[in-house]
Length: 347
Image (cartoon, rainbow, N blue to C red; front, side, top):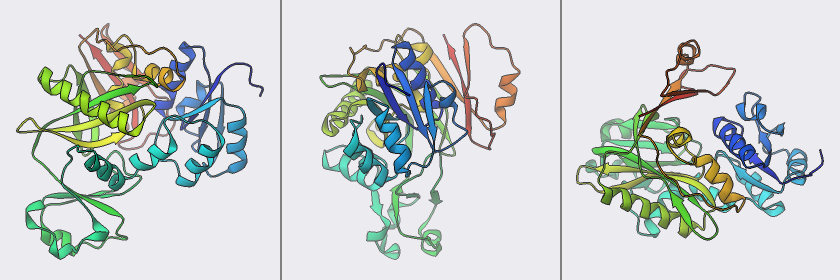
């Protein structure tokens, strides 16, 4: 393969990668996907792809040689791979940022250091289980890394159950569960000179998996602007380039607590494909490739529903109506709770 035009390399080949590839095509940018899974929908849309372990340096070298710039569709890349590619090619966002945000403890510690409120948290290795304050319960104990869609999490209602539980290792973070009013997310795209963000999306999770998102969120303009300012502060402090998502809890007192940050395009932003003048995916491509920014503008009210597991079969045989947009990710293997597609309705 010879490089004739600008080629963007994308690590990861899931549905987020698929939408990034399609956005890049719209902007006349070639794409080359590197994924470790043969069941990766993005490979059917990209100009080139490699299916290999992220630790295979020969394959990484070939990939790097044939792209002009690299980006990510998901954050859980091995640290050694992040170090290796950062030495070889320009990557946005920077792998050093990915290292912070793929580690729950580093992420929460970073947020605390810049004065942004989160839920109460502890590092399991640094505490005596028996001495943990009773008032923190109920809690979630989460793996430091590689947890998403509810994976790597254990719920404890009281201290008695927590003390009895035997953890395989102590690389966990403890987070206090709060009685929040709702969950929202801000998707922001930071360019080299400025940033643009969508208004807040309101999200509903079930078993730690996003079920649906809608826009506009049912919050005040003041709270919406506060959330956008917090997201901007985070992106600026990290010197982030690209699209990222900041997820918040809205407390009963209308206080914003950052739950977590996704250093990539995000599930809650799928409805930007149909409800806005520009999608989160296009803005990510524009930001990392240093193209002219496009300010998001909502043109419809919308709701997006995730389609999980075997539910995809019903949607594949169902006709959509005028205001509905069905997206089948084209994954071959159907697994329980696996994100297989989504449906967006505009109003």
